[in-house]
Image (cartoon, rainbow, N blue to C red; front, side, top):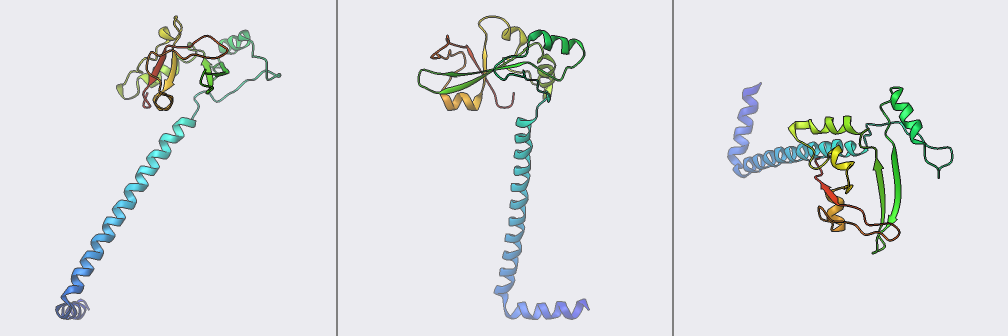
Length: 180
């Protein structure tokens, strides 16, 4: 069965040699397209995985006061930690305005409660967290950590202070790599 088919193809392409070049070109372009699509797909999957990391929360539980304007007492949080609930961290949020009328949302996190997360991320791939140190975070001047993308967007530099309208200036800024 193979012999007659091969002879027929050989006879056809002997009479039309340009068609063999077109078939070869078509196969080459098809393989190149397949490799390109697989490469784009792999890049998209990696990008989705990195994006999912942004939304992953190592502290999944949230406790709010019954009145949204009030804060949960610190003693209650300490009692929870002593009782063994380590999957919660107190977070305080404040909306401020800069002199250029930019709105900023500041988020304060208990540095001591974040120690296990900092140790875990510091050991990742042998990298140390650049500038993220509990000692630095609890000693004056209190640093404000900001991501590299946000700092570039706002034009902020490492060590800069940020002036606010209704509050004293905050900083110094510590710009963190997007990988940190």
